[in-house]
Figure 1 (tube, rainbow, N blue to C red):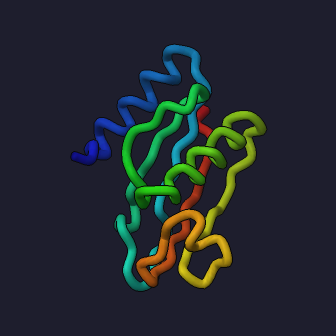
Figure 2: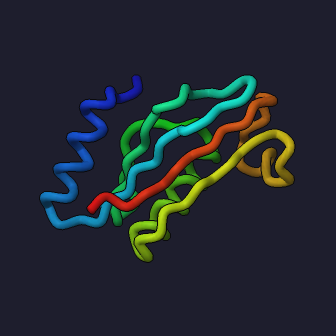
Length: 107
């Protein structure tokens, strides 16, 4: 079961209140077949804990990894995944669609 946006944002707030570094990833665009709709969120803390979903499978592993870098350096990132990418099969978005995910540090 996926967490609601309210639960996801509340968890991000709890982690920040506990003094942890936190990033939020948001699906900003989709093309064709995509596992999650625009506006879907994934929050990640500095320890690699996460809640929510932006895609599933290996794509989320890649998003978590990039989010950890965002927490460390404070720089937002725009990530794209799709079947045309040479990494598409590696990260598991083989459904024929594309997604764009914006990752930012929560301050």
